[in-house]
Image (cartoon, rainbow, N blue to C red; front, side):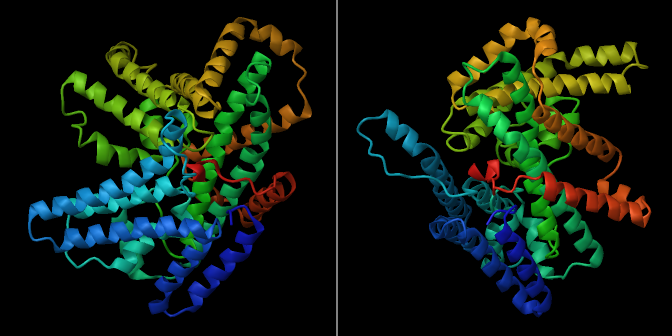
Length: 477
């Protein structure tokens, strides 16, 4: 029951309508039932894995709340984390290891949709309870609903428990303004998914299936297209997840903030792309390692560890079992290292040329440089294997001096024109959003323009969207 499926378009109004009609004391049980039905639609066996994670988390949370000594609290936390994170490692990597080690039998293990996301939320809940024990006895039902809440279970955001649980306690029905914002986010996310991402996907898949034989220029075009495919696929899911959640009066955290306008690789990953995962690694890995409050060598090591672990988090699923994810993480770690090493030069330049520092032209150049650095790393993220990723890089790099001539002779088609057009439309809208949110732009418009904009978006979704029920890329992680 994907967000872009007919089944979901039937499920959502029913779930939301009953939520509004039910008395407050029955609203949370209804949300639990709806969440289990939604996740169970991807295979009822998925519910067994979800149940294991939920039960382990609840037992650990109860142990943390009831332990009399610090040692017992540490034991509860350690046991809970080892269990859920150990399951994640086994389900992601066991079959890969079994394929390489002759004496290990294949067990056919694979992680269910969204497993990485709700395991990280389970770990977050346990760690937060260990660090700051709640004043009241934890409520197991609400903790369970935090883990299984259906809008975020497949691909996040990796929500933190504190704000989410406080909203559950209120059990409020949303206001008309919140309902309208939720619907707007659903429509915008659906546009990103079915009009942009799903139209780009066939071209990217076609070229990346034959990296050794596709013309270098087409490899480059497919790589550019993939950058926007992965962005619109993932951020489109997030927009819809936040919008759907608002229909039930629950606000999820922002997960994307127009990442391709980033002026640095650091801000790309920490402030604009998959923000909730970046904050998870910051709070539960980077800071415990010492963060930036250590010597230079350890600081650089801590940064690289975070990016490598992020690569491992992606590895094992997604586009095949590819260790290219580890290279993807390492490359971004190296880019952040380079930024830190060059930062003193940037400060000197700002002192000597203050009129240039922070100018629109310089910001545009920085955004282009960051985009292309990230683009190189996306090659290893998308390629079916590490070897394929290297083939793409070397073939593009070797042919780079010839690109002006190749561009003049390339047989561009209507498909290319359409795909470039939808990307341009996306970037234009996001450029306006850099100044203020889209909802504020719309609110300032006359009524006829506001409705005209949304009808145009709906028309584009219906006419230009691909409706084959394409799965969201990140639900595979």
